Image (cartoon, rainbow, N blue to C red; front, side):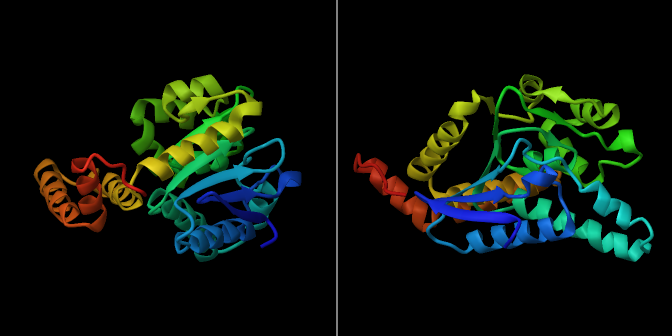
Length: 257
């Protein structure tokens, strides 16, 4: 892969956006390589947590506008295929069976803000800005809004999506887009330490099931959702990780995850 770097360290799979000269703007090829990277690490037993990070000053500036301009003469079917390409990436990250942490060292705009939104956790630096600027150029924040509504609710989503404004990192944290704002020199260390807490203290199987349930239960009615939860509860009791964890607790031992 030319636009993405992959590294594995201490059970963390690092996926690095490596198109700094274009502020890591998303093109068809770039999205394709991201999908490949996530698919590769999904099957790697040496990886328990994913960290999505970037080279350069910007985390991701959104869609490559020169690329989008080149698509304007395409047919609807051709543009739909391209749009589905991005949709599949966002859905893959949102439903990924391993926890995904965004390490955001610079601005995350439009589709780049969308990348941060679909990750499970986001850590950033004080100078980073966040926003969905599509309405300012006559475009729409279409795919990202599906996930943003789930993450921060309708009111704040409308504020972000309809205003097109850029927000400081601290404002993004208050909205629920970002989990923590840390000084730039401490960002990588903070993300690493948090990832290690998840790796050492939590069952990977339990985190995967919990992520799946969060994604699925929101579309169900109250009774259906509760029934679904009860069924998952029953299944989890017979899982190997549950047996291991409860046995360790009762024996006053710490399970090795």
